[in-house]
Image (cartoon, rainbow, N blue to C red; front, side, top):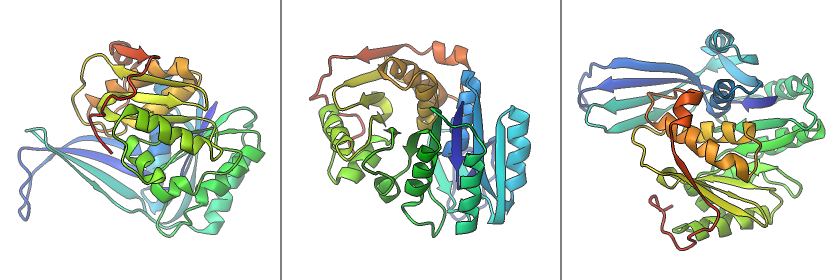
Length: 314
């Protein structure tokens, strides 16, 4: 069983429009609506993969109960902790010419009392040797070390900890004896180490710098270049054989979910990249089926071209 914690979930909506006209009335079609936020997306991907999952999330009074309905319909075991405020919406606008515009709301604030309820929800689960995933942007006003304290609490319950966050929220979640895995993209990794990452070797060096601070392993998503899994003594790269086109919203969450479900080691990397790539062509934050993931051919590169320049230079 893999548990996920989402403190700032979102209602993810994708609209399709002919051409976006700024300052004018635009008519759009609602293409997709999904329960979102990184942790929720991880649980949805785990369910599609066939892995048992439990989702803990905080929902505001406006919109929070919708998550309970949606996760129940998806068959995902969960606990929604309701607080005051408005649940955020993340809007993806796709123009028919392929242009994608994203508008992400900040979300509600969170109190120390609600964080105690999150700790209590974790305490209800048997987490011995189970993964707990803390993922997503923190709420307005939340201390940047919020994930640190929650992750250490999960570790005290016997869990293995994975964190998928950004910038200072990620750097402030690291401690000398954990977490077991972090999943930045190359831009987030560059932000942590404070320098540009141009080649795969740059990504590996930056990952090992983070590992030296106490992280056990780094799974870094590289956009069109696939992903690299790095430990203190190993580095493996995987990428789709053929380019994938579409909107990569949620692809990193799907990668993390299927990597953990596949064993969280170098043998799980190719499958995780296939699931992630399969999601890019799907609308919104749709989760691929196993058949869609199996249709993606992935190349596993144990012998790395360390000087290879990344498509998306951070």
